[in-house]
Length: 453
Image 1 (tube, rainbow, N blue to C red):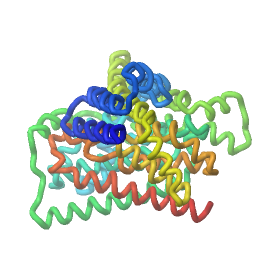
Image 2 (tube, rainbow, N blue to C red):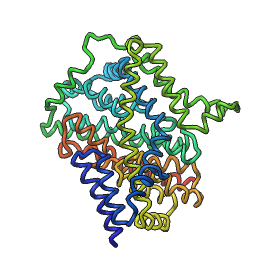
Image 3 (cartoon, rainbow, N blue to C red):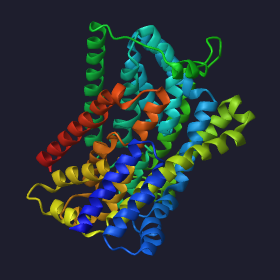
């Protein structure tokens, strides 16, 4: 009884501390101490074994995915330094018109994140440009924040096949699948998220306009507007700006495409069997292309690459900390009872996957953290139950992208902080597009898979 109460108290403490802006690593260390103490886990085992080096240990995860995070951080930085990221945003704005500001925000964020640009870099790219969009279209800031969240943190993160996102790579590495596993289900779910999300945001915009709610600038807007490209600044065109992203995706697609044509080679087998290394190589290839194509990057590549490494460290540490938290939680009797209950439910296995991955991601407020914990603790049981690795890859990814965006999510807090908004101001719309709609899309994918398989 005390052990289960301590587990619940530790989970609640983590959420409470995260919501109050406490550093996530510090919050995790305090929370696992409470959990470990109440579950009679030796302190040395908590901090020197389960948290750092277990199957779901923080350092185990960081060691396995360090290269991917670094390459992603570098690619994001060179895309920003080359002005290619801004070039994509400005070109799409010119083509669609500022009156379609919400569509612009969603599409640009989706293009950049699907191509491998780090989410936080995308936020910093879109917000300065978004200030003028919000002003000209008179869009409430809360809705623009939700459009960024929709484009950067939903369907390109968990649904669309081929992306070098950490979520896609975690599943591929643990299940022995490739980045295209369950592809058509992912595409279907991604379309549902994008269409329903934009329908909701456009509907809310019309309602806001009818109620007299409009754009209200704050100090953050004035600061960020100064970072937007000057009107006389020469930016690369859309095609040139997209070439590095195309290079990343083409590198990832190449082994699968050659396999489809019956071509086999040693490097191809390596690429398909090493998703972390191959996705990292693809991001590095995109960075090198930026170096070749864009003068601003050539002038200061070493500095920009170093900044990219710095960009990668905080997300890596935060994600690893959450996973290390899970590494302690899965040692408790309460978690094993919870897992046994999930696996014992008299429901189809894919529906059980949907429920379990969602709940774990909700507890950790991290899709990547929840997915890694799910893969190391529950996925083997589903494989034994007969779920195909490809289906498990995509359904688990989709499910992990549901409850991950609860109020204590680091990405949600970062977006609100960046834009100078509070949970009261903007979380309702973010919740709809990043929690409710992804859950609907994931559940629809489960039902279709059950009907067809």
